[in-house]
Length: 245
Ligand code: UDP
Image (cartoon, rainbow, N blue to C red; front, side, top):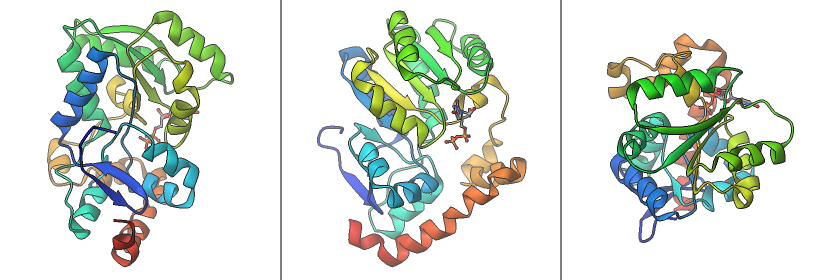
């Protein structure tokens, strides 16, 4: 956990009271000082999943940094009277870190997404951050963790982005943390799809209005079932949220 940082417990999952730039500064500090850290960015769906799965809840709560990738979590924190400063989308947090480490001796590895997506994400990120040291990529569909860990360790990255979707990536990071040489391990969900251009980010206005979830619902209607968890999350926060504070 970030030393001396206040947390708020939302239905059993702890979130740090940090802005995006504070979260980025923490990650960059860990990378430069070679400190081990797991970073997660749960949205209300994942909080609900952790509510029913105490093992997942423990994985999230044992990590060094947890920030809310979902306006629903920020609204919940307001309802509970301990407002989190802002939504910290995993995608934006990673971009902020890339900006800061691009000219430093820090190397990055992309693990996750379908065949060819991480390669494309690498190309696109190098167009944006030409000095970023991306030392390797691998898709997210594999059978043996050990082989992948060895491949990643052979390239000796400092910052490992794991985009296997939640909660798979959370468990993967927890199970492999000790044998991975990388210092900062971050679950990034579908970020490689976004970085590669395969999935478009919502227009800025949607993001500003806290409606990115709505944009994703209309552009990817298959997510509708997952999003049904959002009203249940809000209901639970109102009815029993105070118990967890
Ligand atoms: N994925 C993967 N391996 C798997 C299952 C999923 O690499 O075994 C990838 C998938 O291709 C996608 C990401 O994980 O890139 C999940 O994206 P989604 O937007 O569903 O994740 P979220 O950000 O909502 O957790």
